Image 1 (cartoon, rainbow, N blue to C red):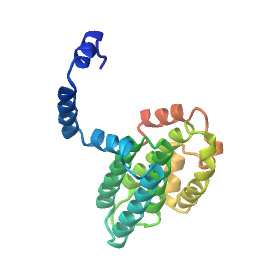
Image 2 (cartoon, rainbow, N blue to C red):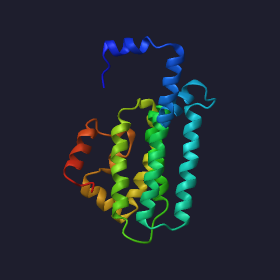
Image 3 (cartoon, rainbow, N blue to C red):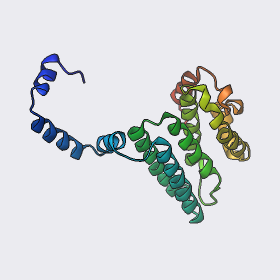
Image 4 (tube, one colour):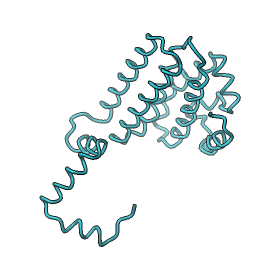
Length: 203
């Protein structure tokens, strides 16, 4: 939404007390905005600290789920909740590197816990879709970050090739194994991803 010059002038005319009242009213209605402002203004922790906390949360949450032998459907629900936490972290900290590294870590942690009960096809499709999404974000990062992503991509590549079903699905949807290296991601990966989605291969 674009704000007119007149609207901006009207807001500027508010007294300090009126502005403070309006700000606090907005913050009560927007949890993410409130946390973002707190982080930017007075939080003693920086982006790296927050990312490390998320890494611990991901490991602990996925490990606990794996030990409980959840079926793929319940495991997928839990992973979506973790993904939402990562999205929240990114909105608060604007951590673009963390958006990629944390999601790759989530994928790798999930694949460390093979599930033995029920059909895992939907879970596998969800994870491969997330891999493709992270490839599109990787090419947008400064190449200096690539060295910090290489090991995660290498691990995921070995996990995919080590699973008959995952490998089969990845071949079917057109996810090439050589792309699982930051230096080898095609520049037009976003177009490739859109094409794969448009053909209904990620359902």
